[in-house]
Image: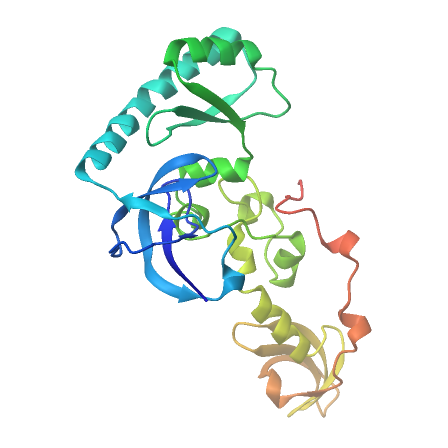
Length: 293
C-alpha cells in the first residue's frame, strides 16, 4: 500500500497520483508537481489516501509544494500569454502556408516551454516554422500533432444530448468503440446520428453495451419460434429497454396477429454460443471509425 494524492491538470480529466510526503493537502487545493513534461501546476482531485501498489505507476513522484499566491499569479500570467501565443503562431502558420490546423497553445508553469497542438491530414515539415517561433518567443517550442478526438477533448463543446462532451469533462481516456455496438443497440447507422463532434463514433455507445449484450443473450433470437400465452409464434423484434418481445402469433382460428409480451412469459430455445459469435471483420471497424453513407 502507498499513500498518494490525486491531481488533475487542466487539459485532462484523468487523475494522476503523486506522493504527498508530509504536506497538508486538501481537496481543490492547487499544487506544484514534477511530471515528464516538467514542473506543472495542478489541482487536487483526491485527498491523500492509501491505494494498492498495482494502482500506482512507479516511480511515484512527489508533490513539490502546495501552490502559493505567487504560483497562482504566475500561472494566470502565462494563461493570458497563451492567447497571444496562439494568435502569433496561427499567423506564422499562414505565412508559411502549412497544411495544419492550430488547436491550442500551452505554456509550462514556469514559462520554460511552449507547446503548440495541431491537427493535420498528413505529416507536416514544420522545421522552418519552428525556427521562426523560437526566435519570436525566446523559449523552448514543441509542436505536437494530435488526432481529432484529442482536438475535441481540448476544445470542448456540446454533444447531441445537449451536455458538455464526455471526453472534456470526466472521461480519463478514450473508450474503444465499434460500429457493432450501434448495430447491437438497433441504432441508425447514419454517421450524422452516431458520430460525435469529433467525427468519430460517440463514446457513449459503450455505456450501455454490456446491458444490451446481456439482455440479448437472455431474449429469444429474432426469427426463431417461441410459445406465447396465445399460441405459437415467430419472434419479430426484441426491445431491450422495456424487456419485451414482439411476436407474430398464429391464433386458434388460423389467423395471425402481432402482439407484444414480456420476454419472461415466452418459452423458447436458448441461443447457442456459436449463434452469438459474429465475424469481427464484418461487424467491427477500427476504434471510432464511421461507416460512410
